[in-house]
Image (cartoon, rainbow, N blue to C red; front, side):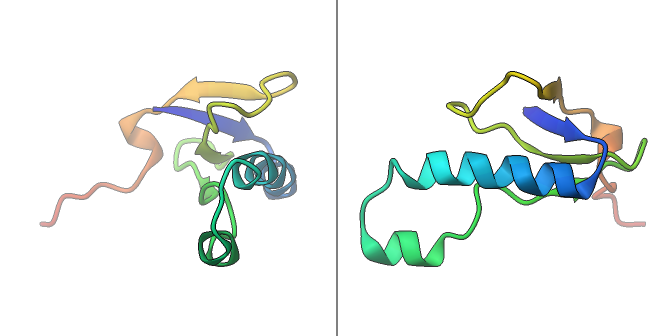
Length: 80
C-alpha cells in the first residue's frame, strides 16, 4: 500500500485536509458527508517517527514523498 510520508504531524494534517476536500467533493449524500471527517488516519511510523497516511489516489503528488508500506512501520499483531 502506498503512503504519504511527512516529517511533522502538522504537515501531515495539512496534506490530509487537502486530500479529504478532494475526496468529499466526489461524494453525494448528506449523511455520508456529515459523518466523514477525514480521508485517512494519520499515524506515526515506528522506524523513524515520521507521520504517514494512505495515499488518496486522486490526490496531489507534487511536493509529497510517497512510499510503499513496510511491515516494520506498524506495531506487530502477534500476541505472545
